[in-house]
Structure formats: C-alpha cells, structure tokens
Length: 336
Image (cartoon, rainbow, N blue to C red; front, side, top):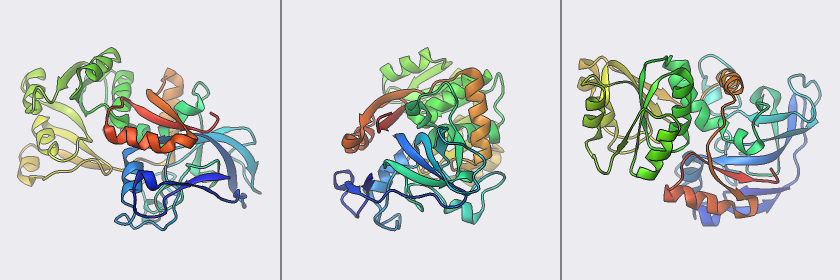
C-alpha cells in the first residue's frame, strides 16, 4: 500500500511517499480503507520538526481520517464490514479523565497516523461516521471538531445567551462557531481578513473583529460586551494573544488553551483577581466524540472544508496550511 512517511528533518518537501505492506487485523482489530484525511496544525509542525518532538522514525503523519471497514479481526462486535468509520485521535482514551497510557496513544505522533491507504485500529479506537456526512467531511472531525466540542460543551457547558470569543478562522474556531450557533451562544470571532470575517458573519457570528485594524482587540471585546467581557475564550491565537484573552474574559469566565497553539506569558495575579478558569484542552475521549457526533447528526451540521488535495499532492496541503489563508479545514483525498 502507499503511505506517506516522515523520515527525518527536512520538512514538508522531504515527506516521502513509500510502499508498505498492507496491515492485517488481529483479535479485536479493524482494517479500514482510508478515503480522506484532514490536516491540523499539529500535523504540520510534526512534519516540520520530528526530531524535537522525539518521534520514532519513520512515522506516518496525520491523526484524522475516515473510510470504510474492509476486514474484521476475531471478536470484533462494535462495527461490521462496510461501516464508515473514523479513528479516534487518542486510541486509548475511551471515557473519563485521560490516563498516562492514553496520552501516549495519539495517531500521527506516538502511533503511526492515517495518511495511507489502509490502517488497522482497535475497535475501541474508532467511531461511526454520521450518515449525512461525506468521507471528506467526516475526516475533519477527530481533532479540530472534538477539541472545540470538548472545550465549549463538555468542559464549558456553553448555553444559550453565553458569549464566546473565538480566535482566528481555522478548524477549531470555525467548529466552535458552529457549536455556538447550535447552542444559541453569541460568538465573537477574530481574523486579519475582512473576507473571512464576512464568511463567519454569514455562518452566524454575532460580532467580528479585524485584529490588524484593532491590535488591542481585547478592548473591542469589552466594548461589544458592555464592559463585562466574554464568558468563554477559545485560545488558539499563539504567541501574544493569551494576555489579551485574559483581559477580554469576564470575572469568573473560562479560557480554553488549545493543544500546541496557545502560547504566551501567564500572569497568575490577573487570573486570581478576576477568578478566571484556565483549562488545558487536548482533543477528547471516544465518549465525547460520540456525544458530538449525535449532536452533529441531529442538527445535520456540515463541516466547513476550504479545499481538498489529491493524495499524490499531499505536500501542497501542508504548504497551503503554512500560508494560513484557509477558512475551516483542508482535506487530502484518497478516492473519497
């Protein structure tokens, strides 16, 4: 089978398409024909700097994929042949709090990822695709969508009337916008592009802020909320945004630090004096994934896919992500 491999330093252009033997499922395992794989910023930085991340090389990148079950190992009961499924980001985090073992079971990192034609996963590490979604759409859910769901719904308990600040228009923030709309919350979203802000407004954003025009955007947030601040912040902005996110949050509000994106200096005094809640969010469990999928199916929610790339042209997808001009998700297709 064909698979992309990270062989060492060299970045995206050194990503190698290789031939590997097709894997065979053992007891309790499922063989999946991958039809689509979406990319996340985490996948990009893994490819760009595998040495610092201490990967065991060669390594297959990408955590997110969708396809159909083509072979079952003995004892499998959760799925059947032909079912469309997605792999869980953490293969060994079924429910509850994550364990040390679960933390080291991430696809495209501790474990080989899904940028290949076939993958074998344990049946406990997969979930079924909502019926109304294509494989391309489903491939966007395992990381970015679940991260937003975990933060806002599972951890934050976002409800109608809450105000949520979303930084940027990448995958996590756009899913966050969709979940805010689904739950009746008011979303404020930021971008340096008026075109992207217009698109976000069309998707239901309550207010938008161009952070290039308003570099002190936390002050704009205060003005928009009558001087109170927002209830929740999805903090994916990177270096320099966390301090402003703290200032933009109401007394007693919550900030969700997302994966490897959130960076910056934390002033503990500012957190204490405002009674803020700071949450580290790293994707989510299979149980959360299933909860999210039920909501997506009930609402017939469709993920926002900016564009797709053919499997043979996968490197272009990562270059496009690095250019930061996308809105929503980028997906690599394998006869999807």
